[in-house]
Length: 124
Length: 128
Length: 250
Image (cartoon, rainbow over all chains, first blue to last red; front, side, top):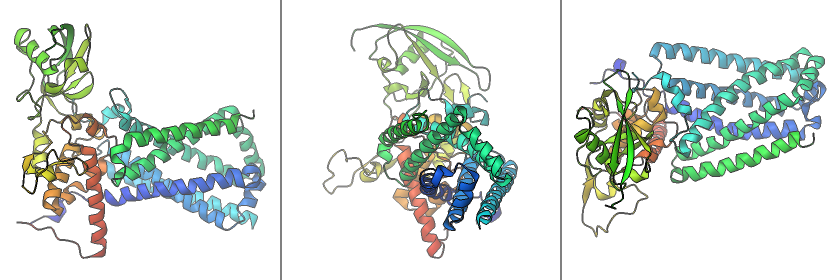
């Protein structure tokens, strides 16, 4: 009979890995849009404060940028976790790493989203 | 413990000697991943200038137009292309597509990256 | 043999368990068509009887003689001297990486063999199953059932070359994962998928493909790991939409 408590955690790989890969592919798409719009389509290439404010008036822009931010932060931190896992940390150290990554990731995403909303409101 | 797996041997990840294109791709992907993560943090901090009003942001943009920063941005774009295109290769091969031609895929993608770097370099510095 | 003679220097790693590694030089007169293992044997026979190294079949079936030759993993019984050095040059010989050193060029493969055992990797399988799907079968079976030895000779070269295995002792490694893929092909046993589906299994691989590059025996562990990943993802997706298949225990 298998003792559930002593089984190694088997399922920590597939889901996070799929999130990383699919996130990566979506980032390529969103980065392309972000880059083309910000630097080629947007008038002036968003090089002045007023250009940025005007740009964020269009509702789809803050939505797209928030999604982009969340995907990039997640992909980056899942990738960083993957590199750290290669160093074979103990379970205890991995718990600490996970907590730090969640705090940093949430913090960066919330900060970035608030900044985006702030800019969108400036133009409203 | 010289010959056994150990975290201190991480430097071996970045040693291209005696290795094949697959490992070079792995090395490039890892270095660009770390570089881009650092850039992400810097980018978020820099964009906080937007919250400080027009003068702060416009001052920052003046700084961003200096050659050193522009070179840094070119490095970031290069890293982004390397990481992104190699990521597509990894996504494909991880689902069994193109595993047997992974070396050729890497070579092809790196040609695209070089072309991209040249285009961006010309666009950013060519008019100067 | 060609009749040409080369004068080469073998720089051989000398080490006892975790002790310091030193290199000892031996000069040899060799025929470049001979194999690296022949040179090492001759060093042992005529110059230093204390040199420890492993060898058995001398024809790439037993997997005993895997070593680092000039920094690259090779099966020394089938590595011609002329392919790795030239006349008046140095040949550096070291033990495989990522295994504890027992003595000089001999490494402890015990843990590795235990994992291969857990993967239930067979030694003899049907001809079609032994070949990779994109390989042409060596001859027409004409409806008859043939069997052959599997390609993996458990030499450990892939483990030595793998960047993930450099830093993580808990990573199952390319050979074990390739063995799981082979076993799962034969038995469709989901226990094997579960064995590979975790952060020290297939998801620790970062697609360096060094394992396939150094494999002397056509196993293509990287291809098998990617195939295993596909199987695991399909298995997990199927489980999302139906009641989870339960693990059967004897």
